[in-house]
Length: 471
Image (cartoon, rainbow, N blue to C red; front, side):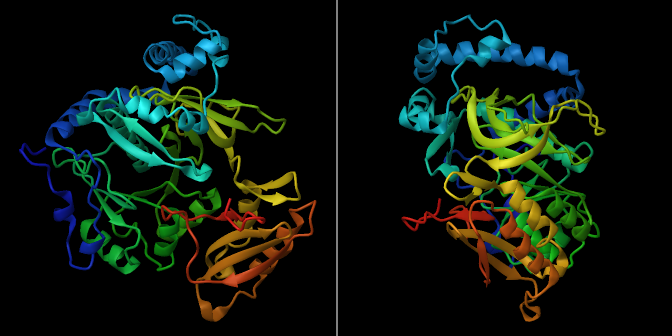
């Protein structure tokens, strides 16, 4: 730990050569990190890290009691301080102090991004927060609706100490103050260090793999955090990260399958584990070293609604950390199925997500009123296109008409072509997924795949057949 009047310049220290310099990300957030903020966060981490580790293993019944008490306090807080919730709850017959049972909580209205945008909830919250502690992030997601997420400093600290614990779970050990974390991402981390300890450097995902490989060898970080699509690029070079001294990799932001992460783990030589998060809820679930997704149950309370016979339901979340802009019974928009098991060999007692079906709107259309869910499509991709023998480095499936789709492929070796068993099997089996139309799929070779505006990869895409726009 370094006592100084200036924020420790991690970016400059980690600019070890001229080639990487243009790709080093520096924070462009409205509220910059300060020495005072780092001191407060460092103190919070040192005070709470032991409890944060222990809470992973507390008995479910005790945790549920703790969660309910948190919900009681939170619901009364939003009722008394946020007009958006007060109007909703009054219309539902709620009064302050009336939340006494889980059934009472489940009777509260579910809120959505559309409702918040219409009510201008973000502006409502912004007006009550002091500008000097106001942190914000813009989100639109697949809905296309823009909503600014506001946090105060307490919320930022709450989230960050849990993220530090998450990094420990990825590493499989307690973090040391000297551990360097290395991110390959769009934007820099909010905190690049804690007074020079627990450093985090971010490099652009546009950096050439050769530049990143050299940089990794020079810095020797303990933990790498990256988009799955960039990891695919790294893996294609034959680089073994274990030989550098990197211990684990965490992925986020882009959807990836278990099969993809297992294959990446084999190629890169170290564990590749995923996280499930959103701007609204922060970290929702993490993949443990036993390949199970655990809900982060001290960060929020998560429930399923409209559960079908197959066990899938819509994920609804309540965040415990953000009092500045609370999300209570918020429709996350994802379809998941919870595991019935309460035991995991990793030792965590946090509930588990058994499987994802993706967002409610993440699918391909099968006729007028039916669809093929993302997990079915990506499962087929795992069994065919992910195989190295397919010669597929990256792919994207775009439905361009009710009965037509295009498989865009970026080959590993363009000279080898795509006339192989894996690709042929994909073509044959893909059409059989559709029961209400005779689906035809063609292949298009490309050196660049379309992405979201943020730059994240988009594995499945549907065009609006009438307007020619992407859904």
